[in-house]
Image (cartoon, rainbow, N blue to C red; front, side, top):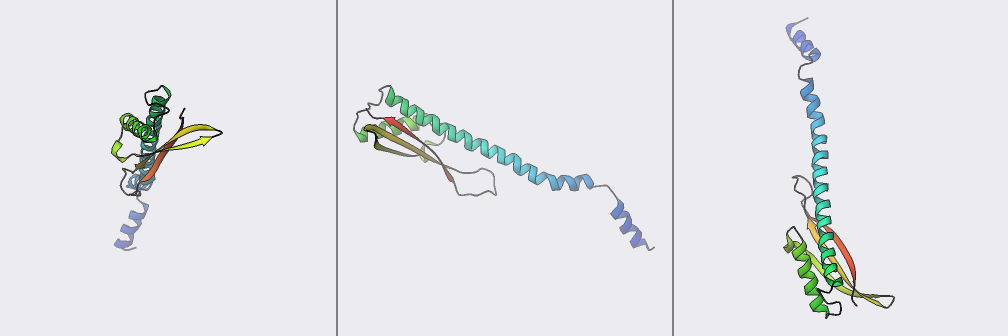
Length: 140
């Protein structure tokens, strides 16, 4: 057997560096799973914050701080202000829509809030997706 063949055979039979190769194979999926969990937690937090802001606005109508029978423009501005004050994140990105509907003869104001959520992990989709909540509030 020549020297090159012995060197090649010794290289093939060697176990040194196997742990590094195994770590390289396992590291990427494990890292992606961990970062995915973090991003899901962030999205869940923002969704809960949106829900809290909508609940605060609805509560202001229900306890009379925003009159239930107020004109649509006054009620819409009051609801929008309440949502933006209660939201912890970047309130300038909120998309707030206030409407009216009648269900079985009862009047309601509908409050819809959308927030563009973007991932912080590089390499994921850079375009934001909208997280949203809506509430139906009795209008008197």
